[in-house]
Amino acid sequence: MNKVYERTENGVTSTVSQREGLAEISRAKMEGKRDVRTMWSISRTDYAIDYKDGRSVRLILVDAPALEGNTQGQAAPVERTALIQRRADGPDLMGRVVTVKGKDYVVDRPVRSSASGGGECVDYWSERNGMRFGATRTARPDAKPGTVARAIWEAVNR
Image (cartoon, rainbow, N blue to C red; front, side):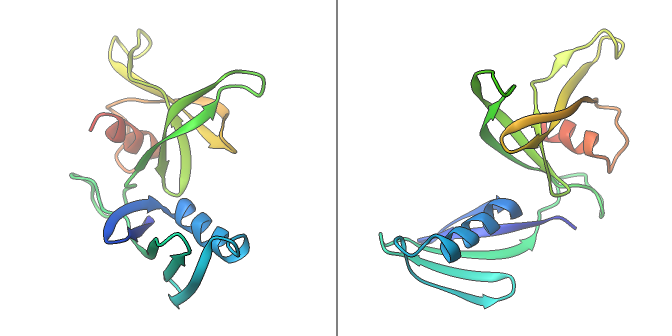
């Protein structure tokens, strides 16, 4: 099952991807000498960080919530907006990033496609280091349940 971090900052709880949670923990451990007052690991999956600016953050690794209609074993995507660079020499832009099965994908907006019989489809790419990477893939509403394409289609059309 997919895992995410439940992040509580001064009583306000939100869900962040496992990658973002681990990045905050790593920053606090390695680079946090100036910003972190105390940090401790309550268990292997539970961390507490007190920052010098008064923030108190608790990160707990939990199972990702299942989307409505998902059965056990299907991907539960986590969506965020991030600064994405289209090409190494191209302009930066804000793009939708969907995390499915622990991997990030840059997602385009739904468009009508003549190739799919006039139905809608969504193009998506792997994301690495803030850039689109790899082949263009397409998600359609008739994608097989439990696949990345189906999870991306459902995330975009929520």
